[in-house]
Image (cartoon, rainbow, N blue to C red):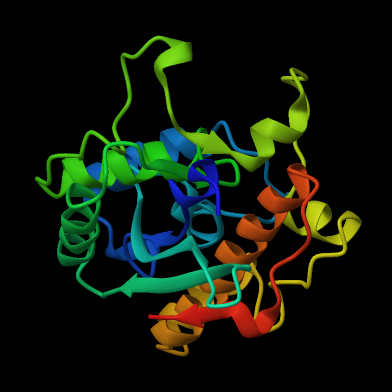
Length: 237
């Protein structure tokens, strides 16, 4: 397996609102959310509280990370490309982020992080939540201030744009057109808050997140005009 593939760490995160309801926020944060909500599209009947439940998880100021899934290419005994996957999941966000940081700190300096829409969402969200929790973002993750050509982060959505900055394409759509098995078997992203706060099922969310990491790794191979990884060569650590 070539060095380019060996040095990539794929990741995906799952986020939720920092609390299960708008009413649980401090008065100070309620005021700030009301200001944010004024700029959000809403249906006529939707209140600030409704918007918080549905949308807070996508904003680092009002959300938190509950799962980080990762994947790395490996070479199988037969010399084929395989994928090793694992996840970090914890109700305690600070512990989750510290554990993830500890892993990144041990990685080779040549490692490149890759996520779908990672440059706009996953990477900055993780850095922001680390700061909120008093965790210093590792150099491998925090590349703010670098010149564009110095940033080593990879982004499968960005790669699909080919310079078209107006274009957004979901991972699910790209998986469909490249005939990559869907990661949406267990649930979909809109159900994460409900599964966490109502079903109390963190493991279900983690398994869903792993599915997205697999899809991203498979998509990257398709961008290189390579074949998909056989499911037998995908292992969980």
